Length: 328
Image 1 (cartoon, rainbow, N blue to C red):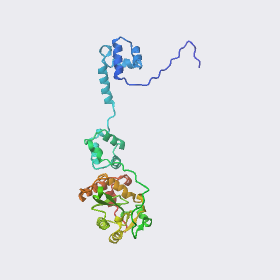
Image 2: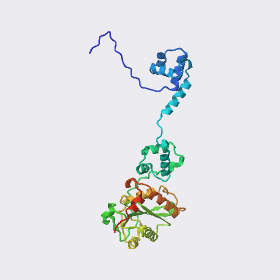
Image 3: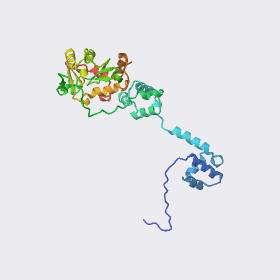
Image 4: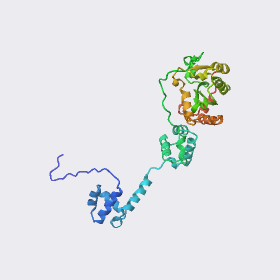
């Protein structure tokens, strides 16, 4: 439709909405003092004249307008309108989450296990904003581990009578039963101590023992001591010389020891991952000189009673002791 020339078309001016700044309010005050109209003031500020009109009317009118009081009122209203932290509205939930973090649970484990009406990022934001009482609560979160070093050349001698992981029963590979373990050692700085760790593949349940060194006989005896009263079907280890007494372990426990391929840590991924979890309490490069078996047992209990995503947020203890029907 063509409009007649004598009819003016009205153009709709689209302005992006912006909040008035302290500088804008000072310009408005100077305009009021100078006796300028709303239109003139709005052109100086760079906003619509209705914005200027509302600003002046809600703050005492032309006679009592104060740019400082107007800014203070604006700041208070903005603060009231901000979205409140959901965690702070439920003190019981807030304390429960804080308690779990202090037990070394991750936010993902907390949400997956207790299923609160909040998300994982919400908990992380609360930690970053220091909403919890303990400012050092970040120290209870697990740090990301470094990548594995590859292409290493084998310098260790070969063990005799080793049975390859290729011959391990399919039940062990499928994690369908309790009693298939993976074993490894964790070394302290300057060889100040050794931890023997044994992890059940199905439940991720951890057994650990504090040793003075990596002597193969001492290590074999420790393996037997840890598992002699437990359901034990197989044990998978790497090719370290500390496992040279594997035949003794097989005779005492009645469980075959299998060896992973060289430079293949993913074949014992359960144990590798659990050792990284243990490193949260005993960082890599730290001395184990003062580490006692009692302290180690405490760390093991924390890990065994912490929910895991891979277990549908059950704990290793719940899975292990709820399925001890193993290989009979």
